Length: 490
Ligand code: CLF
Ligand code: SF4
Image (cartoon, rainbow, N blue to C red; front, side, top):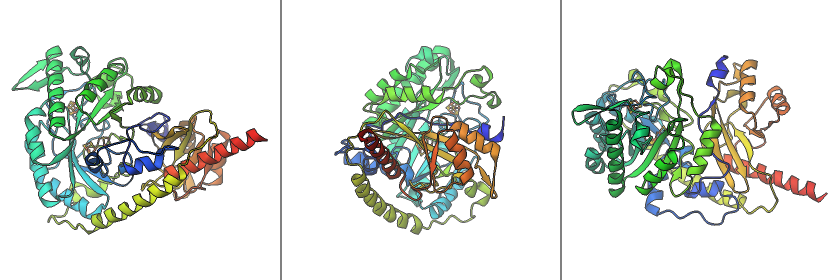
C-alpha cells in the first residue's frame, strides 16, 4: 500500500442536510438555506456551547481545545483498546501521548494559552480514564481554573467512576463531560467489555457490563440534574452494537444528553487489540452516515469529531501538539492573556459579519435539484477556503441540497505538493478517495491536478478562495440551480 493510501481515510461522515439542532447564530446563519428562523435553544445553552469546538460545529471553526494527558490509569477493558496507547473512547487507536504530571500540565496550559489565541477549552481525555485517575485529574483542573479562570473545563470518561465525582465536578466548574456509552443491554456489553474493576474487585462477563451500564446511566442523570452539559460518545462496532446504538440514543436522550457522537471503530491488527487481532471489521463511511441519519432528533448528532489524541492542541483541523511537548515547556509558568482576549473580540466581530452576509446568501431558492451535491474543500481553518490544494493535509467534504449544507467528513491525506513537486502517487490516491465528489473548492490549484480531477468528474476551482466555506458552497449551489433553471427554460 502506498503512503498516501494508508493515510486516506474518511474519519467522519454525515448526511445531506444540516444538523437539525444546530442553533448557534453562526450555525444557523451559515448553513440554513431558505430558513427564516433558527431552532430554539435556551440562551444559557448557547452561552455554554458557542466557544466549545466539540459541542458546537460552528465553534470548531474558531476555537481550539487542548488535552492534558495526566490520567493514564483505567478501570475497565474495552475490546478496541490496547493500553499501550491512548484511551480509544476519544482518541484514534494506535496513538500514544506523553504523560504529564499536574504541574507539567499547568505549565503546558499556560504556554498554550499564551501562544494559541483560539484556545477556549482544556480537557482531560486520558490516556486512561479521567474519573478513575481522579487525583491527577482534579489536581490539574484546580490549578488551571486558578490561573486561567476564563477557560472552559471538560473531561471524558467511561462513566464507571463518574457518579462519585459529580459533586466535585460541579464545585470545580467543569461545564462539559463526555461519557462513552456503547450499550444499554449488558448482553451486548459482554461482547465489548471483558472485565471491569469496581469497588475494589474485578468483575467479568455480564456482571461487569451490568455494573458499567448502571453507573453510566446514573452518572448521566446526575450530570443532567446538576446542569453539566453532556455528550455521549459511542463506538460503532458492526455486528456488535451498530443497530443497538439506536436504543442507546433513546436512553441517553431520555436522560438529558445534549449531543451524541457516534465514532467509527478503528481496528487494525497492528494495534494489538482484541478486535484488531480477531478481524472485527470497521464500519464504512456509508454505514456510519446512515446510522447518524437515523439518530437525528432532539439530541444533536456530532459530525465533526476528529478522534483526537490525549495531548492534542489547537483547532480540531490543525493539531499543534508538537509545538508544546514536555521538553519545550518553559521552566517558569507564565500566562499572557493578550492574544486570547484580542482574538475573542475579533471573532465576535467576524461572527456578526458572517451572520449578516450569510443571511443574505440564504434566501429561498425555488429551482429544483436532484439531490445532494458533494463538495470537497481545502482549508487551514477560520472557516474559510484558504488552503492550496497541493499543500492540504486534509480535505473536508460537505453535501448541499435544498435542505441545507452538512459536513460529511474529513479525509486525512498526504499533501500532494512537496517542495514544489507534485507527487503523482499521492495525487492518484487523493483522486481515488474523492470518488463521488462533484466539486473541489480550494485557494489555488495547478492545471495538471485540476485536469486530472476533471477527468474523474471533480470540478476544481479557486474562484472562492478566501471565502467562508459555507457561503462559498451556498454561492456555488445557487449558481448551479440558476444554470439548471436556465437550461430548463431554453
Ligand atoms: Fe476534549 Fe472531548 Fe472535551 Fe472535546 S475532544 S474532552 S469534548 S475538549 Fe472533541 Fe476530540 Fe472528538 Fe473528543 S473532537 S475526540 S469530541
Ligand atoms: Fe482503553 Fe479508554 Fe476503554 Fe480504558 S476506557 S480500556 S483506556 S478505551
